[in-house]
Image 1: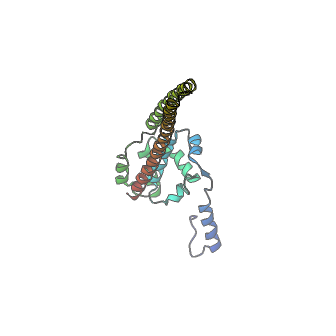
Image 2: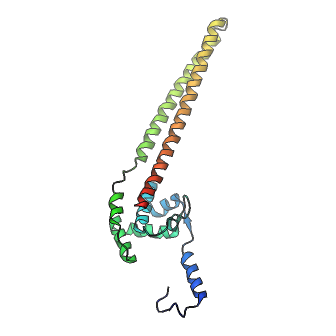
Image 3: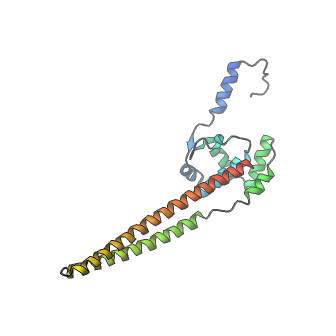
Length: 208
């Protein structure tokens, strides 16, 4: 609202124009990857910075900074850059509180400090190691399968023995398939667990 104008004499069209300008001032949307590039930080740091901005503007609706799933507003980008220019999160939150004449929500700040740090990189490294070991084991299984095939070729006249070898071949192939499927399920389970934990933690922090 422009200083010096009175509600009594202000034209309704002027009011509508100002409201549209305020709501449409920030229209661009960004993904996490966009913010990672623009802010020159890692994905995990982007999430931490966004959490601090939302904490500082605790009275603002979620859609102001996060208009849709996986999308962040231009207003959010502006505040993220302001946060980066400050010494730390505490200084930024205090600055926002002064500018908007709001309390700093000390309880929210102290509570957020208790949220444990995620170990995404360590988990990814561990999963990579498991996958590497599984790949090596699969190679070993394939070598065993090749050996069994050679044995079948040399013992074609021994029907009984051949059947036993075929059974072992099927068992080894089943083991290889089971290991691959188990690894995929484990990875999906870990991803889902991490996503749910992030969502619940965020909701808890927003509720105060």
